[in-house]
Image 1 (tube, rainbow, N blue to C red):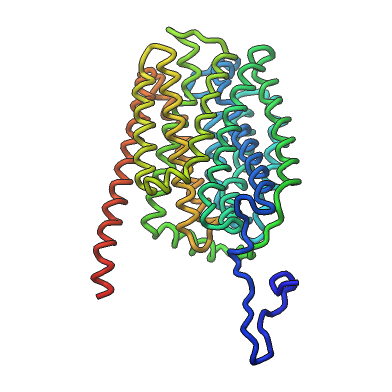
Image 2: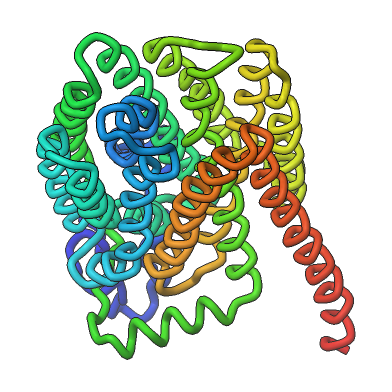
Length: 430
């Protein structure tokens, strides 16, 4: 048995023998095709499915919720914004718990609480109660995103990290898609309450499978729960210019996505489209495009570099926004395809770059990214709905285009900063 597996020292006492070294930690990490990698990928894929299916379970149902409670789009959108806002507020504290008690334990507990609340959501007696339940559900789900990325950064070989995180993000896209499609068709027959109940049951199954499949962590080292340590780690991450840029990029991409998909149901139920709820739910099948673009983000970075991939993702998103302005359904759908592909590619590239950049306190680094990401979702949902109420779909598109301009501007500044740093390195060495 190897020293690594017994815990014994790798030092050999016999002087004349060739020194024997323990296998490096990197050699025992998971890699595509290796033992445990497939189980890990499927487990986190299912966690992503459950997270996004629960988090956005009311988004495709907003017109029905507006009708039952007699409220406008901007008010009904709080059922989405409360969930994403709760996640944004609690993701950092949850990441601290994962540093102390382990990634798998925190992810399991978070899913357990979130699916339990999900089974209560269909019985909300008022819009206010529904918003509160959704906020609690979002806070519970906060233990998933940052802990999952930290788990992957610790347990997967660095060369496979972008691909592994891309698969987790792909699970997000499948969850977001299936949740909206299922709720659309179920709600058309039995109402929005039954629809969100069905999503709750599906999430329970995903949570159970996740816990049974996820391999036990082998490279986790428990950290401290002391607030001073947490604050110092957060301060160090925020002092890193690259991480700050990546956090802003994630928030801006999600501002576009949150705004578009919160409002699209209202646009397609109105003139000139007048689509029924089931068909509107099926529109979210375009999330499959996001599954592909997220899972191929690693190859995209390999060909274009991180900044090149972000330029492409931003340009694709902007093209989709402009195309969606057309009053023709096929062009609107093509616009949604481009928006979805650009968003998921940009998110996968930015989030994996955060995990690679942070050499310590990875859970906090990922938590800060997730916090900004879901703040972007809350802002996009509320601002996008308000812009739609004031100026129709063109208002929502305008908000999205401003966010894309922000992504491109930040990436340009990052490119310039990298060039300046590259010019300074030879001078410093000299």
